[in-house]
Length: 321
Ligand code: ADP
Ligand code: MG
Image 1 (tube, helix red, strand yellow):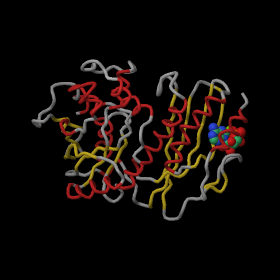
Image 2 (spheres, rainbow, N blue to C red):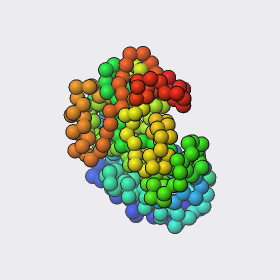
Image 3 (tube, rainbow, N blue to C red):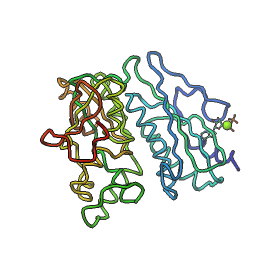
């Protein structure tokens, strides 16, 4: 394939930053982390047919390939700094790569992350991104720091991406409550195609949150990872889960199972001491992110979902206990 033309196209458009001593074009990049910081590294791959349906717009794939990695940096409380991009492409399609790079660099520019290298090969469509961030030494948000008595919080309104996957017939799920308005459908679809990584929220939570995880597999499942790593249990009040207007419009009461178990929204779930409740709310308000208190860390293990009466719900959530 005309691999070098594609690399040239990417190189021409990628922005750089002062701590990139050497970027795209050599055998490897040279990066200069500042003193007093830990380097935070994460990698995620998107495969066609597995992580996005065939025919997804190239610009949306570009956005999402970076977004899922920025979400992992956000969950650690890291500032995005540098990334690499490994592209496996069935053919050297300049128009496709141009559109892909539009989406990728749009999001990169918003977070000041520099693309510093990668790899371009022929093969089934697959996109691997490694993102590197920086966090003040000792300050990172980790999964293994939740403590009994902590409040459990979630940012945004999880469940919308799962709603879009259900409407698209990509995963099984509840049936819509009635006719689906195109505006509501579009709202859900855009959350699936272009998730918003909560980078500023992760930064705002440094020194406030005890533990943090980003929601890629579903709220209860990802909270379960925090509990397992921290050696604690969790109680989540399903009636306290923040509901998106579009999700409720489309799925009615069945929204709840999507909010609790749907993945792909890339919101943050975190725990914080109960006495810091107002400070948490204020810190997130300052970066324009809504967050809701949805439960409590308890002694024991596993995640228990509770209904408005404090009872286990009738069905659908048991496997997280
Ligand atoms: P090498 O064979 O030494 O690995 P390549 O020809 O693969 O070199 O890459 C040349 C340069 O282009 C390297 O700096 C590499 O990091 C960069 N590069 C290759 N593919 C990409 C890509 N998809 N995105 C960004 N940089 C890339
Ligand atoms: Mg190479």
